[in-house]
Image 1 (cartoon, rainbow, N blue to C red):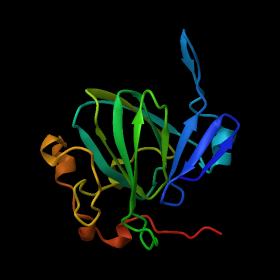
Image 2 (tube, rainbow, N blue to C red):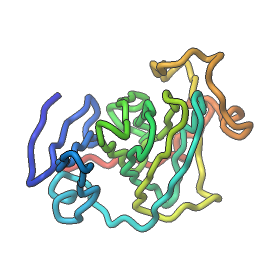
Image 3 (tube, helix red, strand yellow):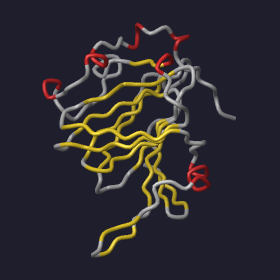
Image 4 (spheres, rainbow, N blue to C red):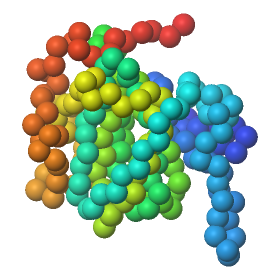
Length: 197
């Protein structure tokens, strides 16, 4: 993984352009620790466009899988992290016309590693809890809009995501379990890919 260090923030590239793993600097001693989870100028320099307009928190138990979610119109970029526990987090390029369409990147996010994952607008997002339970935090670049929701099945064979738990150990909501396969979603329903530069 290519890495660059900004003031107090290490930025790791993934196999997908624009999908980033961020490692804030942690100041710790016997009393505990402190870290900045967001500072707008630093994160803009790292490549996160902002602004962030909605924060969400969820708690889930082991095996709960949420996703794969996105929305269009009003696509959301998401800066995600774990406050307690551990999850396997995935971003899938679902931008219509992207040269990386259908490819995914994943990372383990834990309360101990303090990593953050940047999921750009137009990417599907999902995670599965791999600890007894987990508290998951999202910073979003647009407001949630139920009418704009799109989803893809977590176990879509065309995506072949390497989830760390067996399917028998995964719990999904009825809603997520009835999401369509990617091949059944009209491409004009997805966020269009816009080449940079």
